[in-house]
Image (tube, rainbow, N blue to C red; front, side):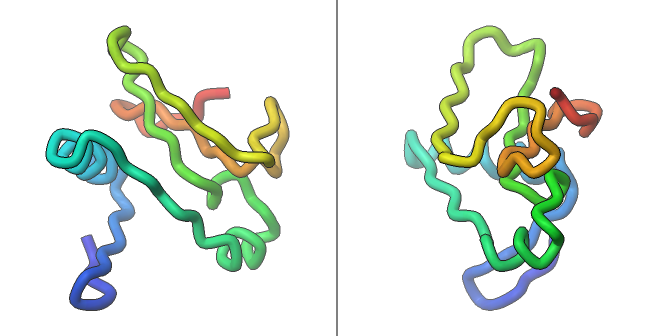
Amino acid sequence: MIQETDDTWVVREHLQQFQGNLETLKKFGSMTVQSDYDSWKASGFQNSRAKLLMLDQSDYNTQHIFFDDNADDGDDNCIVDVRDVITGEKIP
């Protein structure tokens, strides 16, 4: 984890990201994540730099809801980068 400013942290490890999301949801009950469009654009709209959605494929009790106008199925430029929480592998 890298602290950017007094109240901003950059977390690059997928399990730490997932754990942070769970802790936030337990504390507040909901969460909103804002993307960094300029960074995604600078990457050439690479899916691996898109909005991260971590899924525990063994958790059948959690419903993930993701709203975005650029969440296209199977598109390399899709704004959603879906990953397995355990392995970090991409989920199509």
